[in-house]
Image 1 (cartoon, rainbow, N blue to C red):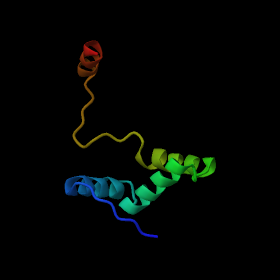
Image 2: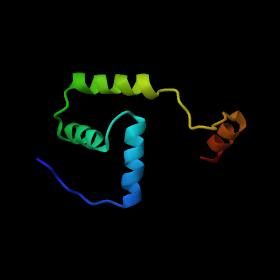
Image 3: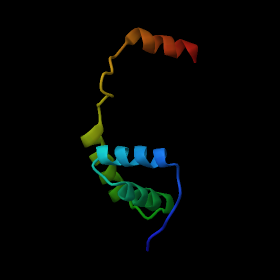
Length: 79
């Protein structure tokens, strides 16, 4: 079955790029979300998905990111 939904074009473009960066299609991510939403993804599938995301994407910062300890402490004080 196919479904159609509407969303802002820029949002869809960003979502497609994010999905591609994760090695998926937007369709894959929406399907996975619907499975989690409805409880159809079992614990093993969820654990495997989490492990894959952690393995493939953990510990990566945005390009050009520089850790700034002072900025982090400032941010913590303003909360």
